[in-house]
Structure formats: structure tokens, C-alpha cells
Length: 332
Image (cartoon, rainbow, N blue to C red; front, side):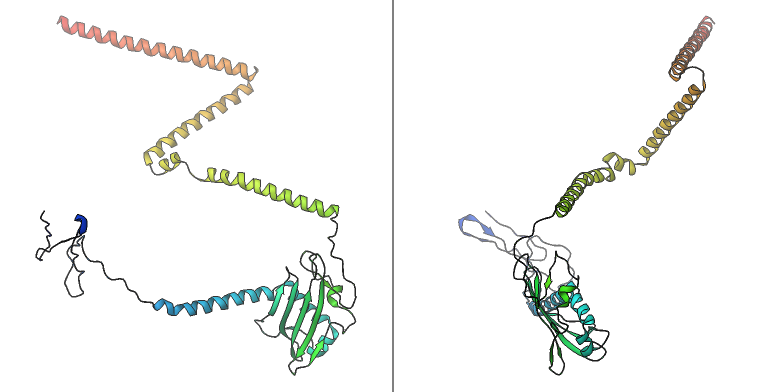
């Protein structure tokens, strides 16, 4: 068996046989930058070498740094916009000792506050610190609260201010009571703050559900079921009515069929208008509508028969005249 390898401007190249009768063709080297224009592409050309550069590894630390900063900023924004931080700021504004230390107009110390610490309401652990300022000075506020039982109340353990000179002021017992226990600033569904000065802790037993709560939850589930059923039924129906059919798509891109369809619609509209006009005429007559309609249909049928008879007679007369003309021409 002779293997021939033809190439333009190249000599015949050999093909080496592999074991078990298989053969391997010699690859044509890829064109170089100064080899001239490429007039054709061969199927057995050699593929260019893959660039094994690992320059992208240098961007991995930058990517990880950006992702870490973005994640920290997102979680910090979530903390700063939580109800716990808002409640502590409100309690500072209403606390007399805090106003004496910080002054009026108590708010975050910076435009972009950093809330450090843990804010885990789900597992009952809150321990946060952030800087606040007033008209006099700024200080580091710390707030710590825990919930020992799943359905229990939060207990405020630490609520203090640390000024820039290192002085720590405990605000929890400054007014004789915990402001978080008195103010209705939280919801029972999220968390509860209990007064630490009052040595009473609510039992961990699950409170009994009232009838109003049960009815409210039942109504919520019913609404969710209705909404789900409406989505399951209305979604496919909306898709069915909004999506054009194949016939509509075919008519949309065929002018001749569009014209015919428009003519049929006009004919149907004219027939409908004529039917409505006849109904109006029937309603004006002394007879019932159904009787007037039957009489009109019989009259139209009789007129159609008379018209057909007249057309047949005219055709027969034309045929007789043609026969007479042919007969006269044949006699001549």
C-alpha cells in the first residue's frame, strides 16, 4: 500500500505506521508571522501551542480581597440598619446620663459606621459596639443581651459608654431601670429585652396560642394557598393568551394571507351588521321576532328561487338564439 501526501510547494512527506496497522500522518507546521498570506487551510495542519501562562493567579488575591471587603460591607450595613441598633440609639437619646456625657443630637460618629461584634437574634446572642457622638464628644457604646430560652425574653447584660479618655459609664442602672424593658421598640416575633434589675425571668414554657393568633395564621395560609393556585392557573393561561399561535405568526409575515384574512373579517362584519339591521326591523313590526324572521327567510328563499329561474331562462334563451344563428348560417 502506497501512502501519498500531496502538498502545494512541498515534497512528498512520509507517513509512519503505528503498531497493529494504524498509521500517523505528518502534521504541517503552522504558518509563521513572516511566511506570507495564507491561501488555503489544510485539514492536517498543526494546531498552535496553548498559552500556559498563569498570570491570572496574580489576580486571585485581589479578587479575594474585593470579595471579603464587599461581604464585610454588606453584613455591616445589615447590622447598622437593624432594629437593635436603632433601639439603642433611641435609648441613648432618651437617657439623661448619656445626654450629659455626649450632649444633644446623638447619632453615629461617622457617616459610614462600623458595627463590630455579634448580632445574632436567631440564636439569642447580641454583643455589639460602635462609636456614637453628640454635641460635646464621642464615645464607644457597647450593648450586650442574651436569650437563654427559645421562647424566652432577651436579658440586657451590658449597656455602657466608653469615652475617649478611657472612662466607662454604665447606663443600665443610671435611671433605675432598663429602658429597653419599658419601651415597646421590639416585636415579640423578633426578640425581647428584659430588665436585669427586675430579678424575674419568664418561664421557658411555650405560651398558649390564642384564638385570634390561630385564626390569623389560618387566614394567612388560606391567602397563600389562593395565591399559589392563582399563579398555577393564571400563569399558563396568561402564557397561552399572550403567546401568538402558529397561524397568527404565519399571517403576520405573509401579506397575501393578511389581505385574505382581512377580507374574510370584513365579510363577517358585514353579515353581522346586516343581521343586526334585520333584527331591528323585526322588532319594529307588529309580529313576534321569530315570526317576522321566518317570514323574511321564506321571502328571501322565494326571491332566490325566482332569481335562479330567471337566470336559467336567460341562459336557455341565449342557447336557443345561438342555435338559431348556427342553423341560419348552415342554410346559407
